[in-house]
Length: 75
Image (cartoon, rainbow, N blue to C red; front, side, top):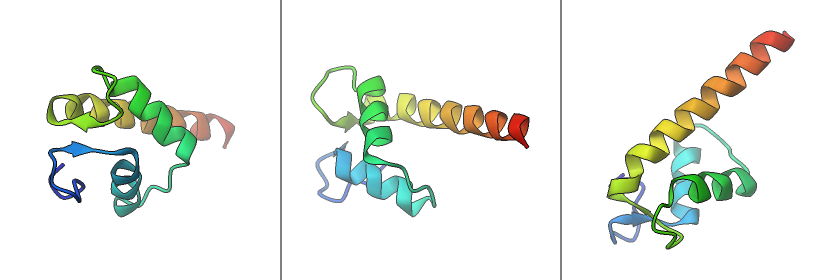
């Protein structure tokens, strides 16, 4: 999380989250980033805190696995 937190405030903004995904080689759409934020931002401040980061990782992994399963089914 520290690497993705460009402004050093201890939280990830939508833009920082999008850049973090890109650094990991995943080019996610703004819509997907919004959905991810909405899903894990429990205090609804529009930012991902350190305590919400674990949920973010779990959410991203589950979506990746879901996408892989759908691709495997369709060939």
